[in-house]
Image (cartoon, rainbow, N blue to C red; front, side):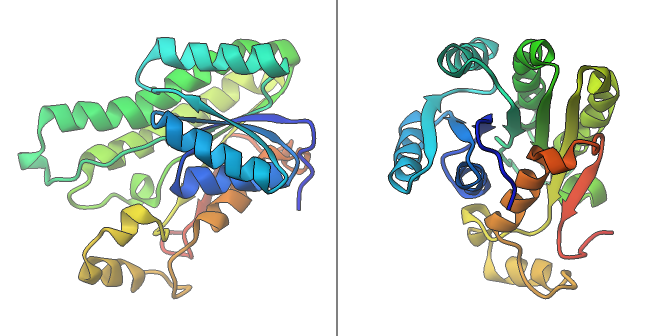
Length: 247
């Protein structure tokens, strides 16, 4: 698909779901993938499986809500590989509730992981990317961040914030040869969506004009494109992977 041979990528929230699919896809295209996750053992196991399949990957224990943890992981990757070409900000959580029942700690937690975590990880790689005069920053938002969804005001705010942050950063970093883009998945078939009640899944699926849920691989393909040289003139954009659910 796209040749990423020799590129070094960090993927957050990489132990399962979309993050793991992104890691596997990047590795298939030749990248060295540092799989970072608060579940370090799971990330290490996923990395071993990628290596067994012929790819290059390594697991790292990293908490995106801790600047010290993020900086330590980034430093370890740079020390080992000498560069960072791609950062994929994928780590995210949900704590759903209608607004008048939403606990302040659940608001703070979701914004802290999804939005502030994206900022923290991005800031940590910038010195290396600027020194290289190039890099790709790709953050995973959501269709919910574009259209909203009842009961997910905290999640929607965090994912919309990622879009605004990325568009601003794209303008700041263009002169450094660094592109900044967003992938906004729609309803994707993952462990998270499988945990939804069947009637809720069916209701959401009925809103997808293409008639099916997306796959983690659909999202991973979009990330691989934005990470590749073929996308070098694309920055500040939101690539929707939603089956025309929101246009």
